[in-house]
Image (cartoon, rainbow, N blue to C red):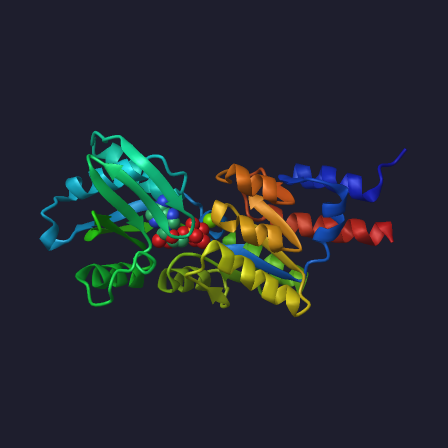
Length: 294
Ligand code: ADP
Ligand code: MG
């Protein structure tokens, strides 16, 4: 006996590296006409490297001193930026203090107490670095170079800025082009990162619709707005910050390698082979199966 088209499409998608959670999802995936991609970990490899370490002149900190606070506070975090910071400290052979009272605010940053000092690390804009502050100028300089800048404060006072850089996935441009062709619409980028770095990266894939500086609920609102105007949106993301958008989307796909438990649970499908090209492949399989079903 031959397998029903949707089931054989699911098996095929599995071979392409996409785990589709149900036959209903397999069918719906081919209906999407708009794709919204997350940046870090979705369009990029998600393994950023620390490139710049800038203690502020007034902080009295050395580069290693700044990094020691930052890495200790980031140690409990699963965020790709946190891993870059911890990895840099490891490479420099720094011994890390244990962080207490760790909390993470998705799309903003983290806070923890290290050696009795309250350390925050995160988006310079979100942590309220006044535009006139030297830290803001340093962050803007890094962002113009395409970096993600994060601000570190100690007991509420800006102490330094870190620069982090991530690479585009090798298949980012071809996958984006394939999705544009399949859906008839150019994909858009939804990111919590700064607009300067985001636009620069997006341009290399041909994406021009870039919505940056978004909190997790802003990503979901952007998707809801598109769907309110009749679009059927496929969201592709990897972080906890993408979970609300994945839940709002017509169809949500999680990049599985770095995907958080919440994200993997919320998504309708999971990319288990770490390639963005698996996404257009799955959309194409759904299209084909739907033609066979009707
Ligand atoms: P993206 O949408 O690109 O995946 P996120 O929403 O995860 O990005 O993060 C947005 C911004 O929030 C980051 O660019 C950074 O400034 C800040 N941020 C979030 N989590 C952390 C963290 N653990 N450490 C430092 N900064 C963070
Ligand atoms: Mg991400």
